[in-house]
Image (cartoon, rainbow over all chains, first blue to last red; front, side, top):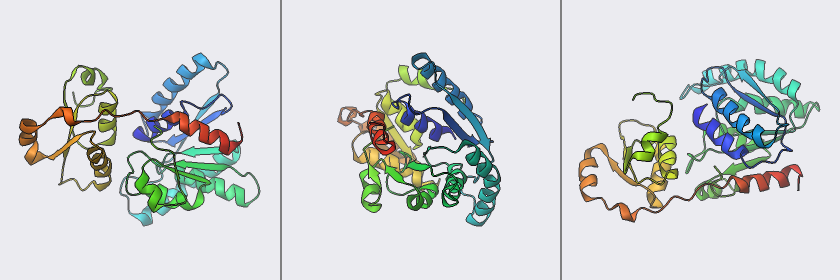
Length: 169
Length: 104
């Protein structure tokens, strides 16, 4: 959604062409991300004409401040989409910035890894807005991601297993 | 004005921005190098939004106030005390990721 998409696109801005094809997964209720992504990819194609990308929508797994019990149910529902999608794409690398949408995708990837079907590297970058506390996605994925990146030193202190590279968006 | 696609033009021509504590608003303004006063709404219990505004204030990039103290802040403000906001460095992320994935 919105701010997250802007952040993710900035994170992608310096990546080499080896990071291809790119598959963008976002919430079906998200109206603005598609335009931002297409604009980014269009610009990128000017430098790297062989650029490939795809877009995928899955049901939004949690509304802002949705209580946790119903969040578990809506996340499970999203997994009915994220599991076949992740299995189809079998990504080598999953990059996420914290919207609820990333949780069902990462859980699907973890499941596929446990089942020996595909082991994806999960890199989670907590949003720049998170200075002192982690988002709910962050609190969950801190334990399940391969690399957990924070953008403020406070968080690095509180979450020692995280990686701190300074502000990267 | 309610839901313009982009405030970029308005930001460019302004000399001072007064904004709520939304991260997008704060960062977009700071990146354009405009002085910013962040107004914190105590009634909106949107606590995590305040984290960024507080930190930006601590680091000297923005001025902060509450709705009730806005007028006073405008009267007494010294914008020259605000520090320029350095851009983020996605290149550092790219370097890190290359190592992680094995493209070196």
